[in-house]
Image 1 (cartoon, rainbow, N blue to C red):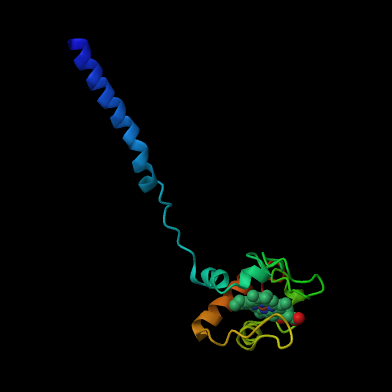
Image 2: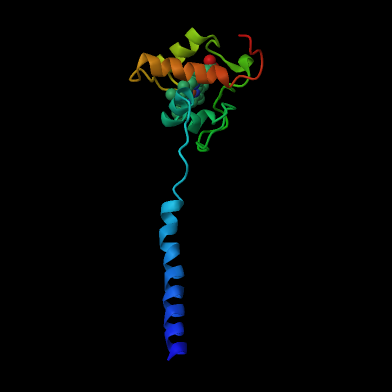
Length: 129
Ligand code: HEC
């Protein structure tokens, strides 16, 4: 009888431990990540899909032909429409007509400024400008 009772207790203990994995998904919720506003704007508005997360010029949008002159935001010399903040803001606001670079005039001024700041932050050459 005692053996029988012990085996029942053991059985329910086993069942109890088997229940634990069902709680696992709750624990697996990833920790909160805080992305700086300019960086978030760059990703959320699809800029990185063409320009790349680090601005090097090739994002996940691999379908673009190789002939497209994609600027490298890391290199100030590769800007063709001005690399100062005001020019970058203009490029974003009005786009580059006739190219894949569309106008983002629907964005707020603060959002466009944040995008320009992000592009300048990606710079690796001539960081003084
Ligand atoms: C569909 C692809 C695509 C997307 C999306 C895109 N761009 Fe562009 N962008 C281009 C191309 C291509 C050029 C180069 C145009 C040219 O000069 O021929 C360009 C040029 C630029 C330039 C001017 C660089 C220079 O040469 O002076 C800036 C600034 C820029 N993009 C910022 C952005 C920002 C910010 C976003 C997101 C809000 C964005 N782009 C989204 C394709 C894209």
